[in-house]
Length: 466
Image 1 (cartoon, rainbow, N blue to C red):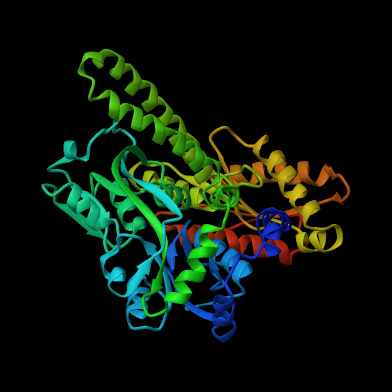
Image 2 (tube, one colour):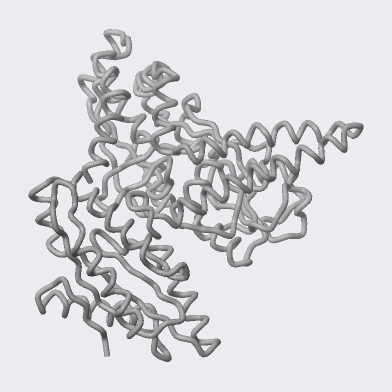
């Protein structure tokens, strides 16, 4: 939380602070209109990160949200965000007149009926996603006859249909459904915007899919203004045009991250390859380029895979990856006669460390504990951060007795270590082993019960589930 606060403060100071005193030049008529109409109702897509969404606290976030904040600072307008559950609901609210402004893609035929799109402020190519074993794809037409998913009701969907009239696409509700379908083999491929696809792959933690090419279709994100409010369109249009390129770039960096920037570099490669395919006399050179850039795509997907399964602070496995490993171990245990154990660990009195020494010190403790644990378990074991100050070790091929011995070794190592600026820190351990018919919930419940028992019995100890 401490680092996140400073990151957010840094972004505010370097992006928004310079704009607070730089209002856009407005006419007397425009200023008078704003004074009479200071509040503007707005609706957007509730699940469209990195562009926009509502977080767990129902706060509106994303690229579009940051643009709206800048427009507010430049004009004196205040956007009243209307929360919704689906994009379909958002469009219905807008079309019924309850919202004066809605975000979307400039070619959205439905929105264009009652709203006027401003000049797009973000353009993103529509890319092709397939499983990790697939090679480079330079044209969607080469996939004719395969099951290709696209997200329904998005503005660029109609552009895809126009570009590829001979291909039958399968419409899905959202990017998550499409990506999971590609990952599990339900679909052979999926089309979607590069920013959205890259963000979702990282968010979901998928390892079996990658971007293999791009289409000539581009998604153009903009704001739609109610046609009955020409003055509002004039004011917001001015403010949007007044946002400098450097600020736009910083907003993109904030939400899309270095990983997407690396993938965007590959976009230039794909464009180059698209030109080279036309030059038949340079086929040999073309093939070499394809191999080189496929290697780059593989490298980027490897980076994406690592990020999606790793806890950013401690570099341990994240919870999603722990769930995946548990599922794999249970499947193997059901098919073959072998066992595995789970060790759940909780740092004793960790809250008091944060309260006494600060969250920065607490973070350093978590990092060091992870280092101690990861360097003192078997190569076959998986060490992960389960949440907050809780960690998990998944131990293939051993029973709870052997796992308990390993836990005791870790407990003693931790007890003997003196943390800089904090002093002694201990942990409690709960151990259990797989039993026939166990689910993930069963294993977690037993190990958690043992951990709770260790806490009740004085902490800094190990309890094994029967």
